[in-house]
Image (cartoon, rainbow, N blue to C red):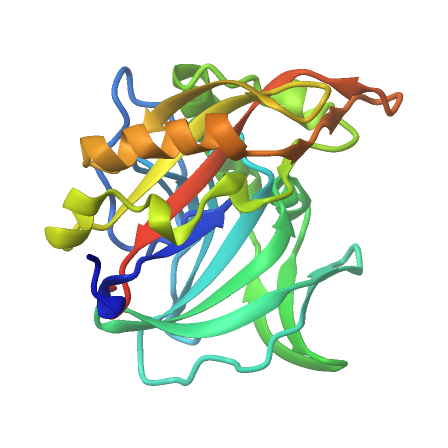
Length: 278
């Protein structure tokens, strides 16, 4: 019998919430070619490519744009690097000079020893908007907040694109085909996962993990195949992730430019967590 305190929590997300200041092991195969220069840095790991706006003397925050190759959204992490407090209640991001605004969700978290403002709800190709931007404004309601300069972003965005393209190729995911869709595939039932799906051996060993799956979603919204493209590091968690998805996952299918359902591989991130553990 599983004790109530060990009943696991499963989270299915399209962006892996990792702190971009700590690099992860690179994926198997040739590393993606990426380069950037001050004030930017591009990094990659098992789960993401990150585009980082480095902090400055007058702005003690690092801004990291995280994207899972082949995913459908971007996460912005504002990482506290000094004593200045992180902005609170951020509800939208405004890009200048275009004046384009994006509604977002935000939450302040503690990651390791640093406080991080995690902002989600940005589209996957948000990075393209940064190419010609001069600054990014974090807004709480209608009130302007922190301004993040976007100078010299063009080369960094190109390097980040090479990073995601290189990893997507290793994962056998066609980023160009996904970008051409009117609508990307999306799970309608959290890939079918239930708390009881947590492998018993992983519960007793207090093992958590994050795994990235490549699932071919049919035009009917069913999984045709599943493969682990980034391992959790635990064989039982990896195997269970694909087995459950193949048995119970349901999707809204991808739609082509004409609005017709298509069959296409897409990427999904599954995070297996136990209560009381980070």
